[in-house]
Amino acid sequence: MEIIFDNEADGEPLSWSFDYTNTKSINLDANSNEKAGEWLKLENHKCANCTLAQSDFPLCPAARALNSYAKNIINKKSIDKATVKMWESSGRYLEFKDRALQDIIGELVRIAVFQSACPVGRQARKIIDYIPPFPTKDEVIHAFTLFFAVQKLQNEHRDHKKDADFLNVLNDLFTNLSHRVQELAQGDAGINGVLIYHSLTVLMSLSITKQLENKLKSFD
Image (cartoon, rainbow, N blue to C red):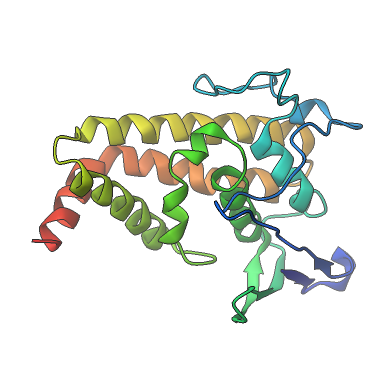
């Protein structure tokens, strides 16, 4: 992924490479805590549902992944824009022009939560199969609904309440991640990038039952 800022004053282009395992987890050294800021430490705003031990993961995997890629833009303004170029291992090339930095960080938040060693995000890693790069709000809601619908089809006795409960757990995760970023960032691009998913999980938790019923009917 290459980030080319529209405003030259925002700095030189950034180039990132994402290396994944065969389980779609991003390769990061979970035990690396060299010069780690307080906002990265596992116990700082640790999620109630986090099952990680500090002895094994001194740093929050989601925060660490976000820091690895977003630290150069996390302090910038949400409305600043850039062009994003992406090359996938399959050979596909994608380009997104004039993307707001909060949307770019939102994409990095998705990677950090669902493709790191975060135990909460790992429960819903299959969601990323249904979300395109830089999705719209409706595409994210569709992806979550499709994920839950597949779970329901695989287990007809699955209670809808479990889906709403999990969305609340995700909401808690994004709340804590926003607190972490707020401790670090001076600009608002970082915090808004996290709040994109925070607001969507709130919206989903309020409408998941109806959304899921409509999606299941489409499979009939």
